[in-house]
Length: 257
Ligand SMILES: [Fe+2]
Image 1: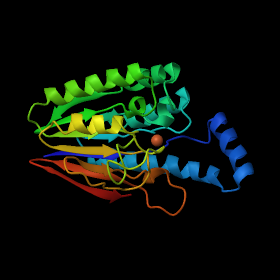
Image 2: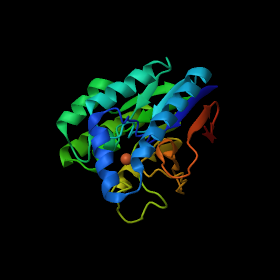
Image 3: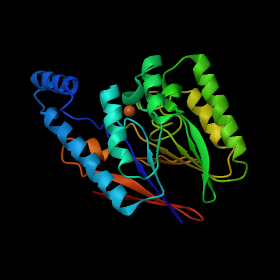
């Protein structure tokens, strides 16, 4: 049995970074919603989560993106520094707060320098785990989208008859595959192309983040879970993450901190 923990939208940052402090103090002046106080909670929640990781030692942690908030190299380095202390392997897929909205070569380079390739595939127990770069599929050039789709087709084909677990930041959809395009999902008709590619596998479970809500959309060929971004909520949400057990099948449950 292998244990994979999944966390999404941690938005890890610190008010000790001058640019973050300036940003939230200006925002508070404008909106008067006290979000600068929340930033400290996001920071502390993520460190509490890492404490659990260090003590309970899952086999892998998958971070579904928006691991940092303001997208600076200082935040990335700080994130890496605290994560490395757990001595547990972390896997990442990029979120819009990590690499920006749309292709931004400097931020993509900064991300890849820190985490390596923005997509990956490997086996764990009887499963093939595949991380997809949906930040590219969400808003990018036709050429980059085609390249990511070709990579995904190969990753799914290489899995042969293994069940696959697919990890992405932006979900394919939230309720049903034909819902309207929005900021929160991959646009049609690309969405349907990705669904078709994934449906070629023997069994699929897709995990996504980005919406910050726990959602389980229904589909005839894909099982899908949207992992809540509960480490970074600033109202009265309980911070938590998803624990997955891999053996003959996939079992998962939300664990609250
Ligand atoms: Fe996001």
